[in-house]
Length: 337
Image 1 (spheres, helix red, strand yellow):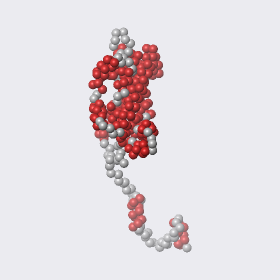
Image 2 (cartoon, helix red, strand yellow):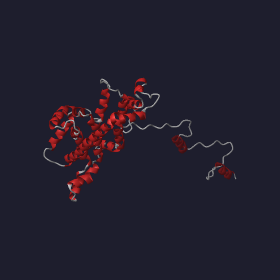
Image 3 (cartoon, one colour):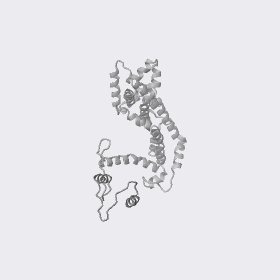
């Protein structure tokens, strides 16, 4: 009877031995003590977990590196923040208010409308000119870089090492060193002050060619091309159906670099183009800035700031849309299997 009551009171299905009145409770077994020590129960303090060791995949936080990264981030974003804030001000607000904070009233949409309509809408003309230079120049440079890089990576021909040396040498030469010879050559050909004077030099991208050469050598297996040739596929069909999809990340990377270089190109159009109707955005905004220093010129600093903000919007949008291709292109070849 005593055994049954003890089993029911303990709430478990296993009967326990009856306790003798005045007897001391049994000491916990060694297994129960070890279990309570592992789980942290049975004592007033819990056992602290050990932190995993710092490895290259789990590096130790660096306070100086974090501070330097924060300073670089502020240095990068501060001009953009200043541009966005001041694009909401009119001419008087730019001079009377703090540069890093908004004015009492916003003129953002009014500034955009005035920028697009000022001087018979010449800003729109400059925007279309820039798009023409980017599509023809950067697009053509990307196509030539893809074709040349693929050919240099997959075909073996005499003089290949010499071509490699020429490409590396062209990458090392700054563009400003070639500006005057290019101007003299185009002047003798009668192409200055025309769009061709900007488009044709933009077609040459030694860095894009070198990048596609390296990317094609790493991403296009030779065995895959040989299998396609054995199956009767021609060279053009092999390139467009097999190689080009594999080269897409590198192609987008070269396209982005070429677009940024052509979109921000200032020195080449400055020496090649004198007609304001063929100005890109970089020269057009500089012309608006210079007219405030001429006799009788109108100061339009609010339109210059708004136009600068509108100028960077397309390139930022392209970067965000093609970001995944760009990141994969930069990481190509970093891991070997």
